Image (cartoon, rainbow, N blue to C red; front, side):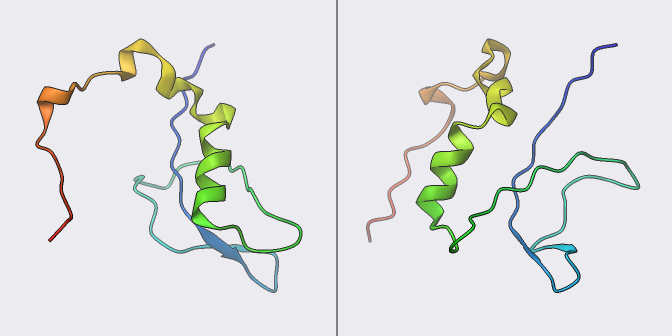
Length: 84
């Protein structure tokens, strides 16, 4: 049986009891079983750019490269300019 998997990226902390504590609530209704992949650095906290670099190369997000996920065009939104 084939299952499709969705991915959600959140940050969190491993506490003194080795329990994962997420920084935000999951956008998934529960109760529900999930699979969890934890990315961590042995020596230090990662900078945001490092997380993004690793996430873009993770096979967990390969589904985003599928043509059916490419549903937006440049004409679908307005340009964003944060220069004030």
